[in-house]
Image (cartoon, rainbow, N blue to C red; front, top):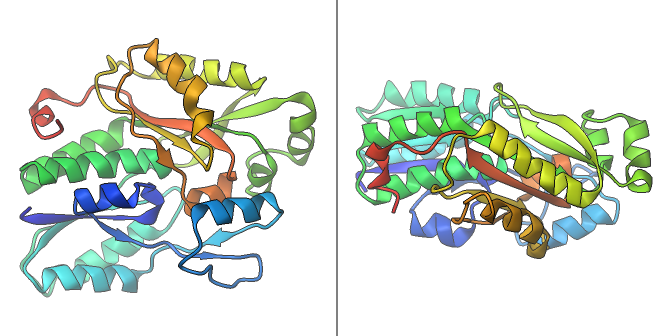
Length: 292
């Protein structure tokens, strides 16, 4: 690979995929409700359990200095790179990366592209995955930039959560809805808008109805024929995806790369989640040869 792809840990790709695609991933740090940094060795499963036990966590954005350090490491070796960031609608990481890019370009004659994913978790993972795969399989710097811009424009998210208290803490649902959700068996459908911000699009009563409605919304929002890989998201119970995947298979989706939600987005929506990153349109044929 003549250039590198840089992402961050909120893309939720697993370590094996990251290593296979040779992607540089910067770590977003998390703190507990006392403001103390989480231990590096804490697993997602341990964090989910602490959340279920009543703890809340906060995340911090990747700083300008952290981007500058990573960019300089690569640029000083003459390595060109494409940096894809967490949505600017959820974090200041894009602005920090742009500031670092400007400084590096003044010092080194390398090609740098910084792209706002306008996505998070599996949506961000979808973009990062396809970018890394295309780069690994021989796409040029310019081709990967074009592919990423297509993906940013066409990436969609949809998911539901089974405990509304985290959405209440983030101001996305009212206290009343959060309190009565378990009693009335209601589930929010969450999506990401054009500015890259999470919002509640609908409230559905009944878990199975929420799965069914998610698939309906995917069909309404997508012209894809199902031939491109899609990215289901779960926490520590992968089986929770089975009803959703079963319904998607009936809609001709057959390529799945399930991802475990990381602590960055789980801190905002909670650890009990089921959803999907998908595309509004099929990936253009000009890029397909790099994605097999």
